[in-house]
Length: 310
Image 1 (spheres, rainbow, N blue to C red):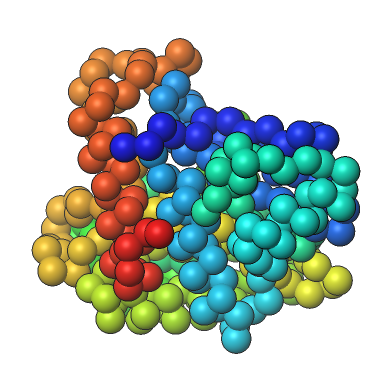
Image 2 (cartoon, rainbow, N blue to C red):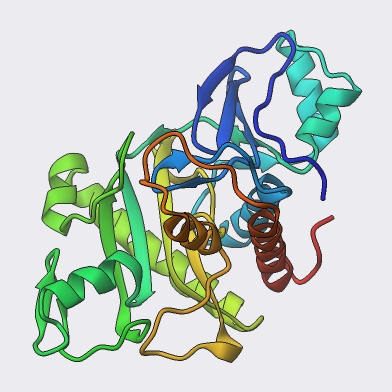
């Protein structure tokens, strides 16, 4: 496996922001998003990364941004490496061979947008935090209302919901995002904009879920982020990747239990079994965990895009 890219630097261009996974550079009217191979679990970034993870996230987002354009504008401009290099040089940066190799496959040029301070989660199946809340509320025995949404009694873990639902969440700078009600989210951004985000999120989810199912993948749920660009709601950040979505293999899907996912669950499981206390510093991931996770990300890309990662 190639060595993972854990950090990035651009000669002559200061870094605008650093997230858990992405390094962001300001190129004037545009932003350059460079997705590293960093991986976090339990809100802690691991000391070693996952080879090709950043390239998978970038290229899969590109795939979906282009497919979703008929539904909503996106912040995606291009991943063309020559065009991106030219824009860096225009801003006073320098692009040598090493920089080109670092950017290859993991750089995306995007428009600037004012982000809404909430996460927009669309769910077609009951899993993850929603399943945990459902069980704790007694949903196995009786109908329950969670965050303003009525759910029938007796649902099984990983079962398809009667219809997809929209569950907004806080956008936490540190710690976990928290599911909140529609009313709580409306108090943050306004009811009108939230209605628009709800409608758009469910449209995007339904389209993507149908497309992925054609390739044998179930999208159980996914997280979208939106912003305003020239006053228009715009899909930003990433789109329908293993970091933002729960992908299941339709061929082995069995409701009533947790499903194997194309994501970093293997990393989480190893960390739990290792006895780590879920606080820094994190332990170094062993080779087999890194390899398994890297293969899982690449397989997710191949299954959805229809070809292997270049």
